[in-house]
Amino acid sequence: MSEEKRFETAAIRTQAPRSQAREHSVPLFLTSSFTFPDAGEMRDAFAGESDAYIYSRYANPNVQEFIDKVCLLEGMETGFATASGMSAIFAGLMAFLKSGDHVLATRAVFGSTHQILTQLFPRWGIDFSYLDPEDTSGWDAHVRPNTRILLLETPSNPGLVLVDLDAAGKFARSHGLIFMVDNCFASPYLQQPARYGADLVIHSGTKWMDGQGRVLGGILTGRPDLIDAVTFFCRHTGPSISPFNAWILSKSLETLSVRMERHCANALALAQWLETQDAVEKVSYPFLPSHPQHELARRQMKAGGGLVTFTLKGGIDACIRFLNHIRLCSLSSNLGDTRTILTHPATTTHSKLTEEERLAVGISPGLIRVSVGLEHIDDVIADFSASLGQ
Image (cartoon, rainbow, N blue to C red; front, side, top):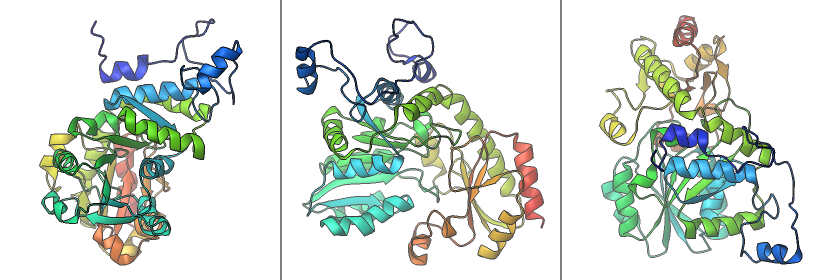
């Protein structure tokens, strides 16, 4: 058998070394610190001359297994796991930036990422510029001598706007920028940005990786020199993931491929049904032919993902009526769950943006985001149909 395992096999068979008990399922290493057989080995560990575990804020067998799996699935060399997706984004930025630096980011980024760029960066003298995610030809005009990083997410939250990863990779290389991709919405099963030259790939493990709404976690994977800088930053600032959460996420990756296949099939079916409804003004899903970036989606993604957005005629009042009559599906701000979840971004996840900022990234008052779960799709559609009929 080839040494290079296929995605599904790597997700299942990448495990921490077995203990003397020869367990089949990896145990939990719920310990804050580790011991050494003698003073010499302790010295070597602290000097960085061995890979021995020291302290769970630095590294832990459960955490390392999670990292090893995601690196294999993303096609990256190494990584560092954090307590949440946003701590991974923050570490990926601040490990490399200083006062006076400049960042380029595509306009369609998650609300909390937007808050870092607009509210926190000015405190530290770091500037940024937003790019049009759909028009890479105009990006060159925004590059400055002090530009350090290109940050993007594709598909975006919640507008499901795509960025051409091939064009973005070429742009970043031509200007010597660190190319960071938030790959949370696609998951490594549907898209691997490393194939297009991404230097750092970031995930909120809380979403599709966990898949059941249980734990928080984040991860960065990338080039060893960049992950070394991230590791230094995180070891001394402390956004470490708990061994328990890492254990949950690592076990969950074993079923990521089969879950994503069902999420995507259900999402496409729901999107196609929504397009037939008179009360719906617009539906957005990357694998719908009506999506303006449909061809790009098919070129760089294996399937369309588990998220659908749609706009109701009647704006926010129609959204409130619809959401208040939902019975089977959940109203929550999370996504990537086995259970279908509905969110009204304008009043929840992106409420801190101004109306102008929301409209600029496609968040209208009538927009609803759906994280399509693993229920039978006929039951989900029945719930939507009953609510739309009110």
